[in-house]
Image (cartoon, one colour):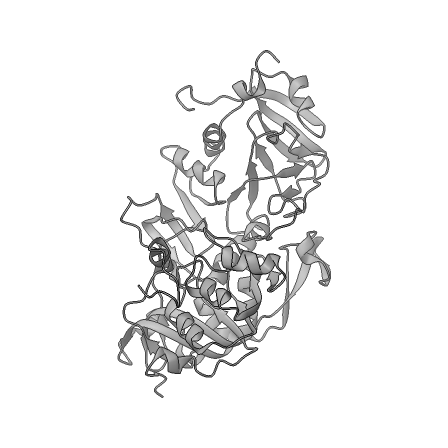
Length: 230
Length: 239
């Protein structure tokens, strides 16, 4: 590799920007807490997206100014939000009926590991401590498309895209696409299919950082983000 | 049929040691913090508590846990900005945790209130949280059997209420409250605004009074988020 991995790989904001380009007009979307929430910041102009939060809001908007928070108006990350026109409130069973019932178009989650079968591990590292699952195991079922945003490798440099997850699973065969810091990868019947990669990294270098075979099915597009975005 | 009771203390006075208690709310939003504090004053022990979380800071559910009133917690997400009360006791083995995915928790409570003893869900299929549960395949997909959840008491928070128990909620403070109202033997609602019977439009009633046993007025309820930002501790320091 000409440059170090850290120098070329996309930041979380850049990964979120790329994922946001695939938000479709008129869609209902759940963004997982933390990193996936960034995607709303980069929603392309002219596309109408209605955001769902597990605690019972459809159509919430950006955070309020500091001091204007209403703590009855929060998202699943317990952060204060505002309402867009046409918003609706509902109780938790209706909220998860929207999730499991196949009514959401897209759910975006973070990941510790994703397997080539589309298994996701994102709720527990399997180590001691207090386990917490929240809505992650529900969100991977029912949305028409379930995608992941993640660094391509762990902090230690180990692959996060693997033939099998070694950490406790959140769901089995549930992920359709992964947006990473180096590539965009779909999950097909036969495993990972590389759709886009940074031009700064070769296919062989990317394969070496991936824990399962990267299949090629047609053209591999250049993964590009705006120069202004860091 | 007048379901109003005169005080928070009276509303919770018969919650005995060993009871199962549902507590509404998602974090601090919709948490009936005054009813919880009244329960701390009453002091029953060995309670099983069903809530989405495990408390935050030193008020509400966290304060109940600090008073060693809770022996088992059924929840989806026992982490918060300040989860110390639960975390310490959990790691010391003093409190049992039943971890339930959030949508399954909601549906188990709804099922409890609706007379459905079990149901199948795709959630948790193939994961550690399905261990020991009956599995089934429907139309080629895998599902996990989950049981209903019921409680002796539910403590919930509503915005408007009337003497017959009809309730409305404020914004996202609705969350688990209407479900828990259905699933307990005795549902106790604190309402911010007690209105005359007939003043809530029938079209706008969210929880019909049949699900509610006691109504207590708490006209200026506290928000857990504000209390925690002020460093409040219950019951040691009242702010």
